[in-house]
Amino acid sequence: MDQKVLDYVVEKTHELMNAPSCSKEAKQAAQNWLDVIGTDNQLAETKKYIAELEADIMPIDGLIAFANSEMGVKVFGEEMAKNVLAHAQDIKAKGAKYCDCPACKAVADILAKKEQML
Image (cartoon, rainbow, N blue to C red):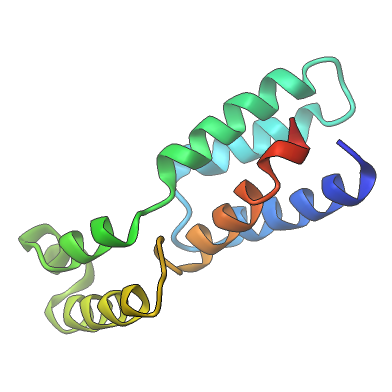
């Protein structure tokens, strides 16, 4: 991975880790990856990191279904669930494939560099 790509992914990784919506698994995978940059373990950990990110990014249809569910109401509260649902439907209509929360946005940005990371 060239230095420009590495710097970009490191920056986006910090954005991901600082996002309130970042899962503990993604945060741990991010930290594990950061810890091995420049070592012989970097490629193996990069593959694990990418796999975790691909598992964690929320497809827009998943977000719509969640926001429109009883569990979504429990997590977000009734009013916020309605707002999340409306927002998700709006961005889907505009072509979004994934949730646009700070964590998913950072993941999408990182995954856009996936081939260059490997």
